[in-house]
Length: 289
Image 1 (cartoon, helix red, strand yellow):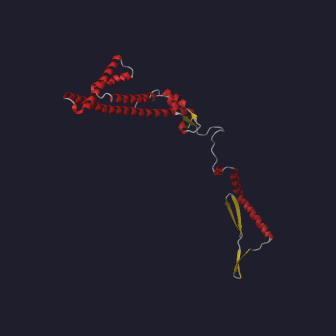
Image 2: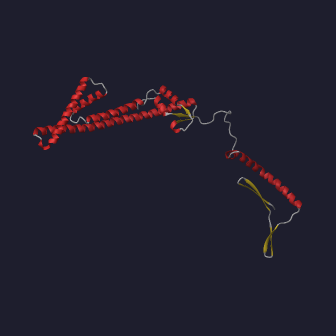
Image 3: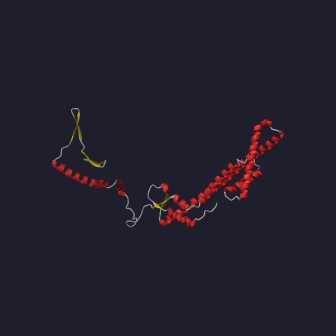
């Protein structure tokens, strides 16, 4: 009986035909003998084997030819079911992407610019006020409050000439007391009773002003922190409104995805200006939380 083995190895078809041997022992040695057959029998057997092999190899050969002529993905998809109809030739079936440039949006929709500017101005004003107060250590509490109030008017250019002169008088008074205080400090133990009393008064005023400045710094810090929290809340509202505008524009444009320009290397439909127009029409002012 003939055994036929069909192997597929590395894209090559190998047909191995094994003919069973008859083993006999002669003079203590083992020999393999092959039974003889007539020429007609061999021809008949070869014809049958060729026919049977052709039937086995036909489908496999066809698969190999397809794999050689097409990419691997096509060969792997050969057994896949037929694809569904995706529409007429030329119809768009890919992902449509829009991109947004935040710099363009911020410039065209400056709803936060005013509040951000307000915070920066307040930070600068409070910093200058504290520095100014630190130079008025020998004014009483009432005198210092009046001086700071007048100083603010001068900074905002709303002070009248009389108010400017009043501020100058208070600053001169503080300067004179500062010189007096330094002179008493230099005398040390040589102070008279009257000078000691005066020195005690000026020292008490100075210490009180230092405490008031610390309290003022804490109050300013809390005020600025509150403005920061409000600005963060505004940012959240602005971000929400921006997403809504992007969604409205994307729906009108038939877009599937919207990305920022920072996250996009190239390509995509720039819808920044359209989002700005949408925001200007629908969100002229941000609500307060």
